[in-house]
Image 1 (cartoon, rainbow, N blue to C red):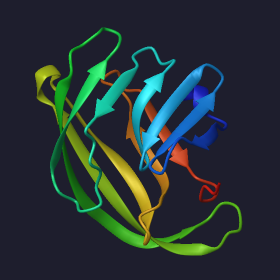
Image 2 (tube, one colour):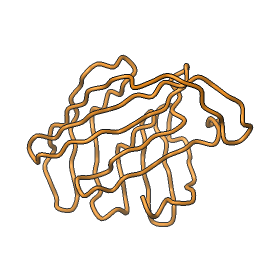
Image 3 (tube, rainbow, N blue to C red):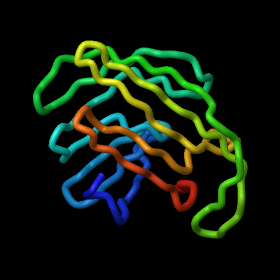
Image 4 (cartoon, helix red, strand yellow):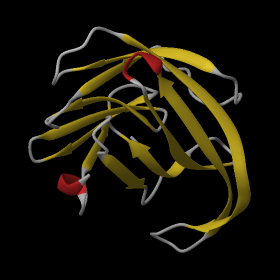
Length: 149
């Protein structure tokens, strides 16, 4: 997303949730997935997101703010695209990653797309490319180092 081109501050909200802040923009992520936004032209909230730890299809609910919508069913499916080696930005050490593609579909508004997640063997997401709304806003997230308290 254009407003987050340089960097954002991240703080842990609880074990699975993180808040990302940059100027007036706020993003909430759950296990690496953006699940709520504040400050975009079309903010959204995603509930019942189960993630891709077991690569099983799932259904969640998504609601948009502009225009305002009811909660809409969003369907997720997953597949492994590749495995490989990736270098950490900070110390240049290498680790094994799995690239997972998340396909999603919101039939009621005829919106579908895909997101990509690069995860390590412990399930930590080091990099992602996510679509934020039907208008094509996307965000690329790259983690410098694992979060520690």
